[in-house]
Amino acid sequence: MPTRALSVTINGKLQPVEDIPEELMMLDYLHEYRNLTGTRYGCGQGMCRACTVIVDKPDGSSEEVRTCITGAHFFDGKKIRTIEGHAERGEDGELKGLTNVQQQFLKHFSFQCSYCAPGFVNAGTVLIERLQRQPVDRSQLESVISEALEPHLCRCTGYVRYYEAVRDAVLETSGTIAGRD
Amino acid sequence: MLLRRILTALALNLAVAPAWSAQLDENVQTDKNVLERGQYLARAADCAACHTEEDGTPYAGGRPIETPFGTVFGTNITPDKDYGIGNYSADDFYHALTEGELPDGTQLYPAMPYPSYHSIPREDSDAMYAYLMSLKPVHLKAPETELSWPFSMRWTLNFWNVMFAGKDTAEAQQQFDQWKRGRYLVDVLGHCGACHTPRNVLGAAQSDKYLQGEVIAGYEAPSLTPEGLARRGWSPEALRTFLREGRSAQGSMSNEMYPVFHHSTRYLRDEDLNAMSLYLMGENPPEAHVVEVGDEATADSPGRRHYLNVCAGCHGADGDGIPHVAIGLQGNSTLRLQNPRNLVKAIHDGIEARAFNGFERMQAMPGFANELSDQDTAELTNYLRQTWGGLETAIDASKVHELTQGD
Ligand code: FES
Ligand code: FES
Image (cartoon, rainbow over all chains, first blue to last red; front, side, top):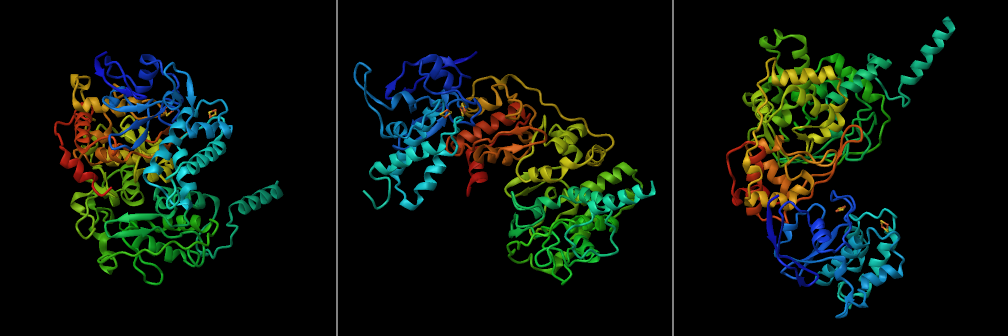
């Protein structure tokens, strides 16, 4: 199988450039080449969003991308965040702190089997980052959260708890609601 | 014995008589067979696609239909007396169906394909009328249609006579029954020409270009001529499968054609689908053109790279697709259209998820407007069309821009 060099930054670290098969999907690259197995393989068809990672764009915005249906080489030269990149860690890898989204998910007991959790954490994070750049009116908040979380499937049906956790996370983050701070 | 027969007859009558006591024209038969025939004909005429709002009550109207002159709304054709056809006699219905004129003299917009329906025989119209009048009335007003000039003008009434369908030519009379049946289903009931025939600037179908393809709601309704179909890989068998199942090796129903499949063609009997294929492709259909896949399918190129990046996860690195999930691209009809419009727009906008017969479905395809630049989309389009569509021509970024601007 033909290979091609891939250069990608994951969770703030430029990965060693290496030749990988040109047909490899990003999910397999993360699992097999980087041992980052927190990104889940759910449907493998772009339907459930368990495999979502965050792409940080040069303009400072961020977006979700499904890695089960996106080739690894699509990310060449890009910066991405996986679920492993959210919590703050010390030099020796020891856990220093969780993000607000993670904390709210714990507080609301959002995770059940947790298979979908990485996707939801990424979705909630991308939403909050977007709202910080483009705050919405309080009256739009409910629909904005539904829209952001709706594509993500949770087999344990923890939707309400995810929803409430994200709402609290948004409300606790300054600059997300227009005219409020 | 006699008593049992009478009771059975009574029970049957009770079962089929309209429960809503709509004022049915007394000359019209309403026995079970007529109602079933009316339902079949209404399906073949695809009434529901335009007269049913998405997820709405069948035939209660309200579906918006985009035309170059404004939005037309399908009307309520349930037996409701205020908003539906509850006060129509069978004569009124026949006149509206075949001439496009309502009992009060209002001229229907030509989005209602009365030019095609012009040849519907009276007994078929009566059966459809009986069926529609047997439905439960729905008291719902469809939004008003407001079109710009010239569509408010009465000259449109004469559209039908420029259409091939309206004339029983000498040539047609000499044909055999299956061909005639096919013509009736394609030209008249199915009104395929309404979308697949080029229109002039005033919206009139150009009879000399019958079924040669036209752009509808931004997508091309491709040519249905025997040559056009065979060039894109269609055989009569594949056409029949496509109409009955909603998908075939040549692709799956999408855009404006999906409602046609959903409300109409999937209900048609095999012999009728055969007749349609025979009429469209002829008794001696041209050989379906097969695309030879060369080395360029796997050779490195910008287009191939885009394909592996954003398409191969679902359509496979070799273009085979995933059964029940994503269609194969080898020999896919959309890749083989001379005009790249449909392919470019599908890549740019994505395609909705679609359910087909049984438990078959195709998942939603995301649009790549944010991931691919116009240049990327042009390279991907060229790769797809040249590799699996067998086309030579290439398009550039400006063509992509032209086809997708305003979206
Ligand atoms: S695993 Fe990628 S969307 Fe389900
Ligand atoms: S917590 Fe089990 S799938 Fe969501």
